[in-house]
Length: 130
Image 1 (cartoon, helix red, strand yellow):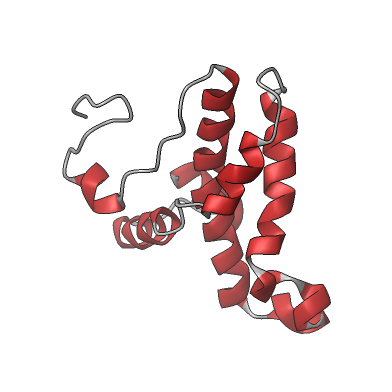
Image 2 (tube, rainbow, N blue to C red):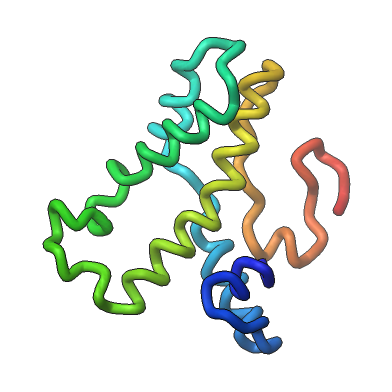
């Protein structure tokens, strides 16, 4: 996540900024069940990149508060609104990518672990310990 911060803001984060950044991104890792239902509609041999692109496009339907067509052209003039969408994308894309891969190999989808579980050395996706 440090590289993502660097790309977004031009500098590496301080320890405080990194903790805040990670907390914000990790609070957006869960995807709506409808998103997983969308992924289930793809054939077993669908290419994961096509699935990822489709799911990313579908995110706009789950967050109408982020749609300029619905909220007005000035929506992204405020930095807090822009940052919220950055947090959403960075948080949800790994979850969606993992689901597309698991779909391709025929495994059930996993839910992301919470930020506190990950920080405290919780279980991994396969049931092992971090």
